Length: 171
Image (cartoon, rainbow, N blue to C red):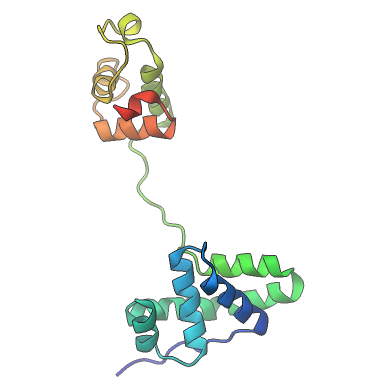
């Protein structure tokens, strides 16, 4: 037996903003999908119907329905005290993914900078390599040789170089 769905309340101004998001050609797909969830829930559709219409399963529809319900009082407070643009921004924030921690980097910022610095060197002069420019594989070898890191993957080195827009990242 299905549970009781979170009751959705939407003010006129919130409704206008949600419809504006749904109609936007530049809004992120997930934001549009979540705005539709709120509008459909407000129109008294159950989670199964909402999920089917927007392409989510009922549990996912329920998550966004509950998120809206839980943030509604804050939206009301903002709506009463702030301009429309602040309300729109808060609605978009409410319907956005929450920050996730992710895994901490295995390498310190100092190690990353030292590895990027290798890519900026002249390989022939600095490391006695008879080449004009480092490749990612050679940067890996040089970082281990200089004891910057005990080991590192080419993917990790490539990622550091790419984030610093180094030319060796294309090799």
